[in-house]
Length: 340
Ligand code: TYM
Image: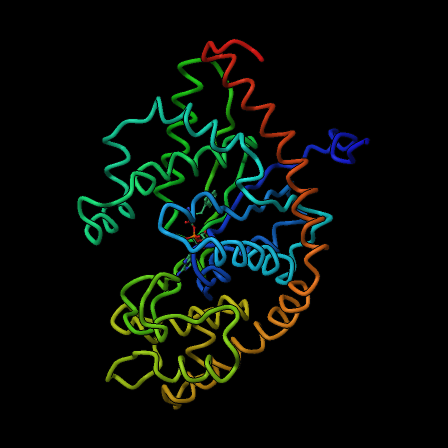
């Protein structure tokens, strides 16, 4: 069989890699901080969008749920507008080079640099001594994901910036130890939407692992649930719609509107002169519903056609394996492992 991606190697577009863990149901934070930007970048770049299932197992998963969420995440990518024929969509565990490269990079990573990762520090407070080793070394797997594709740009939310800096450091270290191998990737963090906050505590990031469901909006939440959650969003007692750090709850709702409507905070504040939080909340809910409803409909129909999804992730893995293996072989050779 002749693979179309092999015929396409004169195409010199810059490379994008990004991924989302199927570790819980995806939130509006994942959508606005990552997926929506991926859609806008797909024409200019050669994009690899991965469902990072190996990252999800750093915490305990029910096998059945992991399987169904992995497919749902893939369906969400496509339903949000990421075209399977323009991009490489695949499942991380279908490309064994990610795990292999991760071990190779493990051997040149310092305990100190992993211990400084704020996500690890936060999680270890929760788990104490019984925190999984995978949660400690996970940024190395993320670096491997990125570096195997000679990625130029990584579109992520603000919370991944530190992990990306580690990927850059590991790439530079390998290059200087063995000779030029990896492209040094740059983060792409959009101005709005990069940090959507928790609706119940707007000083922390909206997260799919939060216990209280009123803290987040899920991409698949039905309209009435979105209305209820937004109406319960914590604001303040100032009562005037302003875009300031003193009003983090209101600021968060304005950011959500800006990320969806592609407008500025100043324009939003201007349109609420003389109006209160009830109006702001009502409109925010409707704007979210309008954005997510077509995505939800397409997700449901994609999930009813598992054959189609299978064709996409298998084709994606074919190309991803080809590119990733080429980089992995280079790494192995430079380190001194005997070629297979
Ligand atoms: P994950 O699965 O936690 O989140 C996926 C993407 O969603 C963004 N995000 C947010 N953006 C704005 N506001 C929020 N509240 C919010 N919550 C999440 C994240 O920044 C991310 O872009 N380690 C990564 C997954 C990963 C990856 C990679 C990313 C693995 N390998 C290689 C890029 C490149 C993670 O746990 O993301």
